[in-house]
Amino acid sequence: MLVHRYFCKMLFAFSSEPFYSTYVQFPNGSVPCKICRNPKWWPFFKGTFGALDGSHIQVTPRAAERAVYRNWKGFISQNCLFACDFDLKFTYMLTGWEGSATDACVYEDACASDFQVPPCKYFLADPGYPLRPGLLVPYQGVHYHLAEWGRANIR
Image (cartoon, rainbow, N blue to C red; front, top):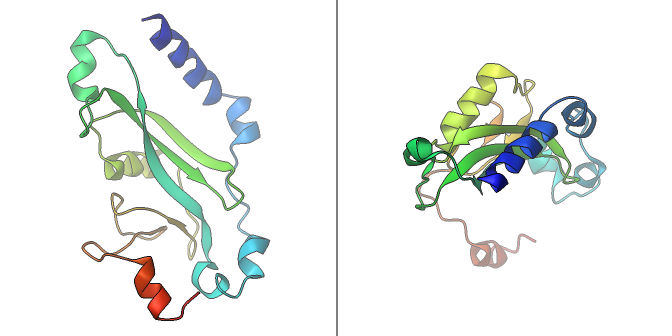
């Protein structure tokens, strides 16, 4: 229980002022130089802010709460949403959801509270997120293989 208490204190410290507003900043809207200068990336990623994904962090809640914190892999966790830019700097984070919550549910909560993506811009995300403006997710049921890209001479 001692680890849980300190984890909660650290989580609160990282998601509160002044730490959060100093170190977690939404991109300014300009396209990173890495993308602009590389002809392999520019036509495809010119409106991209970065990547968005969830992470399950193990927790130890009270016995009465453990059922809702059990994720689909079977361990007790908290589902957290993180976004980062192409320089691997965090641009957004939302913590505190039970491990049983889906990525789409956590994303919807973020959009309802304070996560806004400007028009014509987007984040890259995995298929666990909804297909909607502001997110670019792969098509469901399509398998992307690097070998196929190699045969097409796209490098």
